[in-house]
Length: 462
Ligand SMILES: Cc1ncc(COP(=O)(O)O)c(C=O)c1O
Image (cartoon, rainbow, N blue to C red; front, side, top):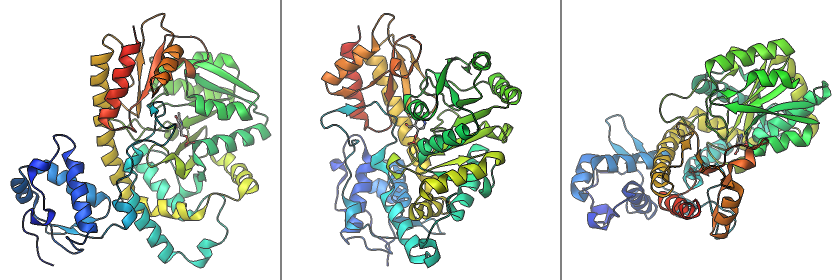
């Protein structure tokens, strides 16, 4: 298959390009051209320099569009640096998915920290699933290991060691139904051992708190300050288990300081306690490399939990737990007795995505996209809520805006809902009363929608 001449095959001219979002626009055109057969598999695409000149677009825009399609598996680079069409999308992949999160119709919901679900790598997932189905042995379609598919545990062990500095062997990985599944399993095993209470951060995530409240008899809120969890207050609580979000505290965004990390380890040794490290969104660090996980410093005292919910999609209900050896057997037995373990096929697909590098590529592209959205949210806040402090922007998928003293954040949230905006008041994540604020999740909406939501909030804050 020869090389395409310039932009002929796209049948587009540059003045059709929208002023913003040109990378996606061009990628959509290319994807449609590949799907329609105008650009068949095997075609060599024009060099970015050539196409940039013909379309009067920046070379970086062309390169970024090519990269998007490389990430989707439709294009591939060859050894000489050229780009060729590697696969045609199936019909369902051509449809541009709705950019908005499903939910209440007419509600522009910036209340939960979802990743950009419109960027879910549908083509890469389908390709991996096809490969898995083509190569799975009959045995792999039988009953699964309740601890998780060995291939996935090995892939996760390598990935977590590389990306999070976790001390891990495939044996120490337990595949779970998300963080919620890990917490539920762990709570039950702790109860069997007589630990019926758990300390949590205040403010802290109300979702994980509710799971622990379901299983435990006591929940002890421990204040969080600019260095993270107050370990003296934890020691005074008498609890022997604590749930923390050290890399990016939810919701404040604070990173647990080195002193507090050491104090937390010392606390666990003193009380023969257990630290549950919820590493939910640590892959998104925008100013420097992600903060390393706590777990490596005390693998016998720390259970490290995380999931695909912030990386791919919560609907997959796939997560993992790195558990100390003294808990492992009980955890796996409990999982076996509960439901015999997680479904095998999605586990094998995830293993394939990790092994092929597709998951890391997806993360790299999401990091850029989420960062752009964060920057847009910060700009819109400066314009529409000037004077309100903003915290927690260095990482994750959400930020916190502080509201003027005396403002009732729950009331602002209720009034926002009347205007079609879903936003969480900071008070929802607090046990003890504290300064008012709003938790703004910026990951899941395109920039104009985000700006629209923040502009509306601006009309509500005095
Ligand atoms: C603090 C925190 N931990 C964990 C999760 C993910 O939970 P799951 O893996 O059960 O979807 C979330 C989701 O929003 C969260 O906010």
